[in-house]
Length: 221
Image (cartoon, rainbow, N blue to C red; front, side):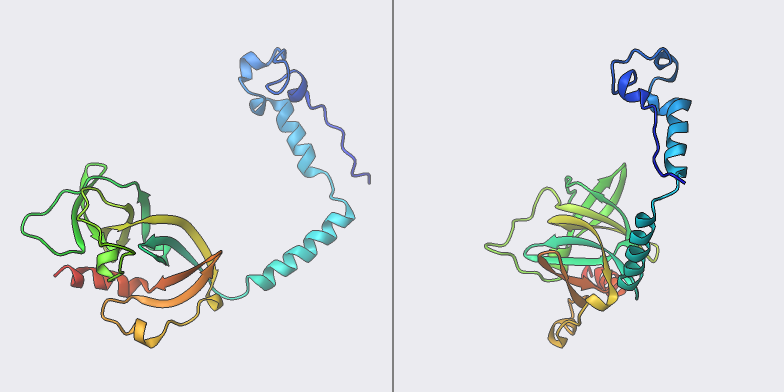
């Protein structure tokens, strides 16, 4: 059977990508809503693939299964001071832009920045820099009137807004690519580190989710 397919691409001639002279445009608004476009799409996807395409994808999918063997971690990657860190993305609710901090009277703990307004609801904002004891490059920052980027999280029924300096996004990392951290680091009272992996051109510290969220209330006492 021939794999050649000739389509009448009227959308490129008289449709939205052409001169807009198609009499059906007034009714369907856009070519993507037109039955002619839909039929062309079905014909395109239903045509039999050429033999070389089947062979190529068989080989490619076989390689992908080998590469994906083992557990894969989904992590939110962010920066705090000079350190790139990550933790389980499943604790994330959303990432929010910096916003004004409302101070809490008589609460002077360095890690507790105050309250932030998230769509009309006040949430406690915690500085991961202070909580984890990450030293700044240069002079220490003043108590800011605005947060850094916020990681809005939920863990064991507790909601926290975690202030960080930069958010890189979500990374999928094979478990085998995460190496152990030195015992002197993992044993620190303020450390939640459980591993290290190389993400693109940066070394990223992987945080243990439970240890991190257990550390927050203890760190604010």
